[in-house]
Length: 203
Image 1 (cartoon, rainbow, N blue to C red):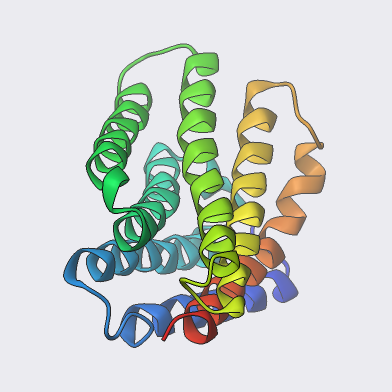
Image 2: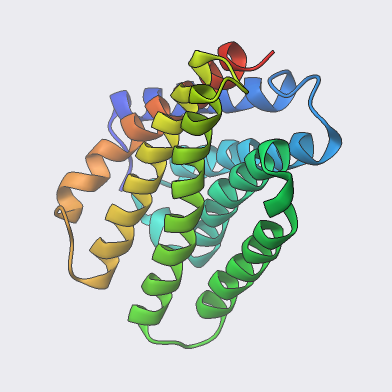
């Protein structure tokens, strides 16, 4: 099923913001954060294009689920590497194992509950980091006040991922019919918040 025109427009704008972040939004960062952010926003751009071209049905495809997992994991790795030196290796290990777990549960026959539980844990941890770390860095003076906006974007990203995960589990927090129409706008707002936070919150 194709998206209504307004939703396609929202997805196009989201792709524009993601493309901006990939092209110029990480200038001046160290190599690993730059690579992590570039992967995260690059995959977000690809996911947005797939949603525009293929419509809502693509959300149930295993490849899209895997791509959508790379986004928060990559952004969280970039943030941890940039601001939490002592947690760099542990979080990189978690991100790698988490992505492998999602790929494995989507590639071989497994119970749907295990698939969704794995997805919820990985998205939940990454989303929590993206939510709390920018807020802490902003409050502690290691980043500008505007960097807290990234945390708001992280909260929205984590909430959206969990809503979709529980909807697939058959125990939706909100009906799938409510979540799906809101998804393009949520993606647009989340991406815009990320771009604004990085642009105005970091030197």
